[in-house]
Length: 244
Image (tube, rainbow, N blue to C red; front, side, top):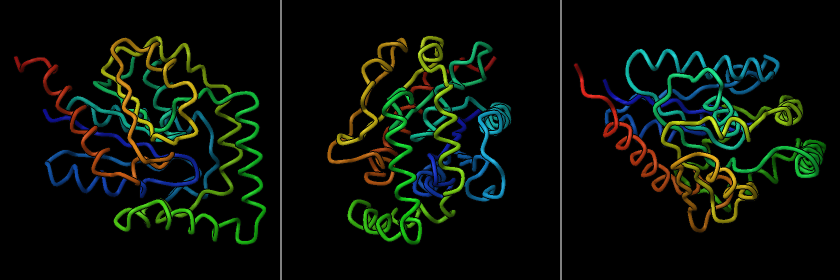
């Protein structure tokens, strides 16, 4: 049974953000399923809820687990959700976890400031798309530049999704995670705030900081992130029980 990869996107974006990873894994014979959470991508007309998001992740993980050990990968909001999911009291059928750009506790002043900034951009003409496009053009390589917005931007889901993250019990979840875990951050990522805490709470977890990258680490240096995926896949294959 080969490793199955489930990919969970961040806020505002969609499954399209993982195009480089899905294509790369396919070239190496690895099956990857990039999800759209409620209110995002192909499910833009739906309302985002935490229950709906976790149900989406759980369904994909359990389906993938029928074909092989599952590596769950999340970016930003998706990373926070997958971390909480991996640390459920009733352990989900996971063999490994990668959390990218998600090592900050989403509460208090930091979360309030993030929501305020997001609302400010949303209030700009064209919902701030000119600025977004300029930022992506300056920071992302051409091969991944279009991927973040290819599935559309979930403007209407943004504030409710951010607000809902405050109820996550990440400290408890982190202490329950028992599978090989990697946290991946860009050198200049604003969500590196609690990275040492996250790593310290998960036995054996590894922290990988990618130089010259920001929050969009998966797209800024896709080859590096793909190498992390292979590291995780190889680890899971090594540790998998031998067929009876």
